[in-house]
Length: 146
Image (cartoon, rainbow, N blue to C red; front, side, top):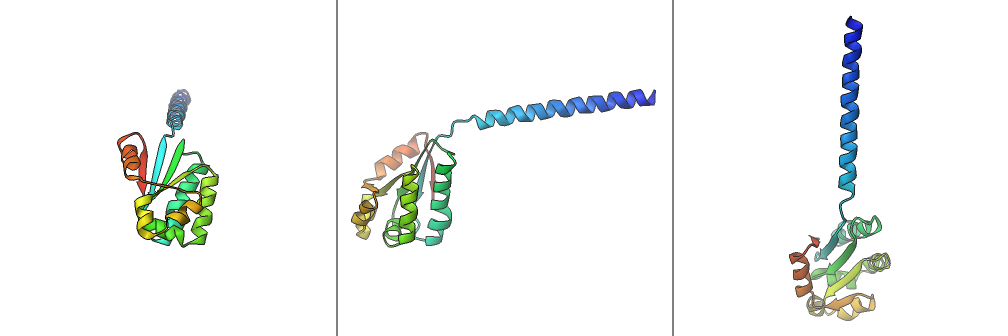
């Protein structure tokens, strides 16, 4: 009698575990099917460590891993001057652009630092960015700032 009750209890526990695992697996599948969306990365920091080890690393990784359908990198403020004077960052930007990230720089910011021509020579679109950034903020874009 004890053995029969023990076997039934073990069977019930096993069924609950299997059902729970199936539910968790199904839930993970639903989460994985969420549309990736669009990401705008606003890079404004003049800190080279932020540029090398955070901003550009994340942006490039997100593009290569396809975490988003579309990624734009916006060079804003002091980052324009930093990029214009740093050959290693320029190499990283070229790689990011080659992998599909759209890179744009604020012309007002770049002009204020006297680096618009250098940024254009890197293949970066230099244009007014206030309105485009505002439109991204008001729409379905995810925006992150470094």
